[in-house]
Length: 196
Image 1: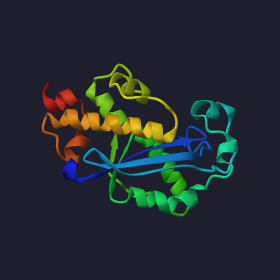
Image 2: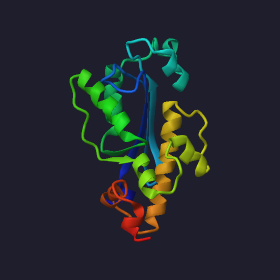
Image 3: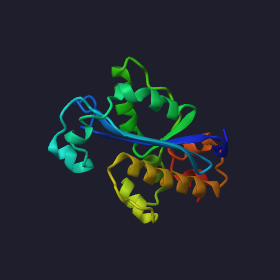
């Protein structure tokens, strides 16, 4: 499948903890859908996690219990989220973290998270060998991308989206034009695949 023909749903979640197994819930989700580098849809909402958030977590993302008190629950947001993600390739920085939470939230609603193709900008960054650190904000800074609002879902989504297209453009110079080719570059070192 050619990259230029696909829709990419870059997403990020903010959560009440480090894992759903540890009792964490999603308290914010954001998605930016693009095709050929042009944004075609966006969705962002706070989510009532139906549990109090610890001050340590609030200190990270700045989302307070007061802010989510009247927000919709994940179950209420789910139909809209599914609609936005429909027929997309999911893109995220440290995608395993977000997918793990989304799978758990879907299960609580009696559903399975669909098996979207996934591109992880963290894996691309690591395999590229181009950055001393692979944190989202650090990579954004190195690429001249604004990290304003870091640790809020839409700000992180927009950073990851721009980082994703940086990788697409860089790899495009080496003839990477399909999703299948791009997926290889998040699994193997670029220099091994490119022969550089």
